[in-house]
Image (cartoon, rainbow, N blue to C red; front, side, top):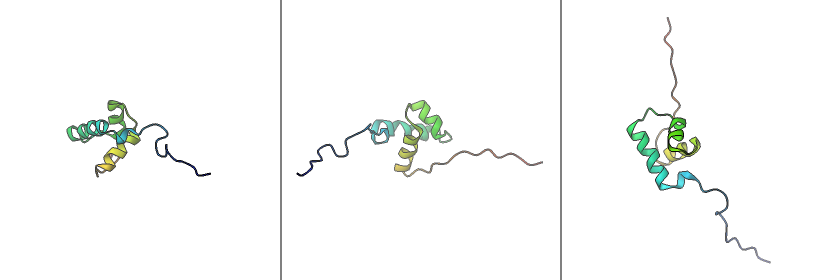
Length: 73
């Protein structure tokens, strides 16, 4: 008996980083304010921060975490 994989690749929740509307909104947010963190952008847009990071990675943008540097006396 041969197995038929009709639904292969279609199970589960659709990823929001594959949605062109979400991608356009996220990239627009980073064009207007590039200092925004991925977590803050995710809250504003309403998607997960991992999806924001995937969108930026697919657009070949560098994803980094801002670091606070304290001055030494």
